[in-house]
Amino acid sequence: MKSFDDLFVELEDKARTRPEGSGTVRQLDAGVHAIGKKIVEEAAEVWMAAEYQSDAETAEEISQLIYHLQVLMLAKGLTPADVYRHL
Ligand SMILES: N=c1c2ncn([C@@H]3O[C@H](COP(=O)(O)OP(=O)(O)OP(=O)(O)O)[C@@H](O)[C@H]3O)c2ncn1[C@@H]1O[C@H](COP(=O)(O)O)[C@@H](O)[C@H]1O
Picture (cartoon, protein in one colour):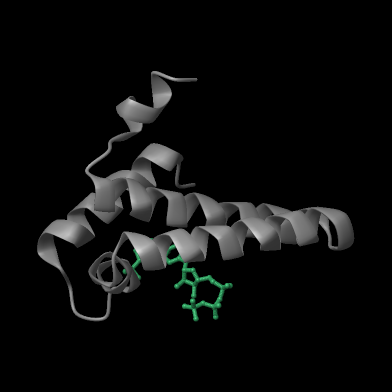
C-alpha cells in the first residue's frame, strides 16, 4: 500500500523525468492556478462524498485531494517536511 511519502517520491520522479503520458507532468505544466482550481474541485467532491456517498467513495475522493495537494507542493518546491513541521 502506498503512503503519502511514497506517492510524493513517485511524483518527484515524474516531475524530474517527465515521462510521456504523465498526468502529473501535465498538471505541473498547467501551473499553480490550474492546480489550485483542481484542489478546490476535489475538496468539494470530498465534502459531497462525506455527506451523500459511501465511506469507500469518500476515502477515494480524499486520496485524489491528497494527490492534487502533492502536485501543488511540487509546483511550489515544497516537501513533506515543510508541511509536517506545522502538524
Ligand atoms: N493518485 C493519483 C491520482 N489521484 C487523482 N488523480 C488525477 O485526478 C483525476 C481525478 O479527478 P476526477 O475524479 O475529478 O476526474 P476528472 O474530472 O475526469 O479528471 P480530469 O478530467 O481533471 O483528469 C484523475 O483523472 C487523475 O488525473 C491522480 N493521478 C495520479 N495519481 C497517481 O500518481 C502517480 C503518477 O501518475 P502519472 O503522473 O499520471 O503517471 C500514479 O501512481 C498515479 O496512481
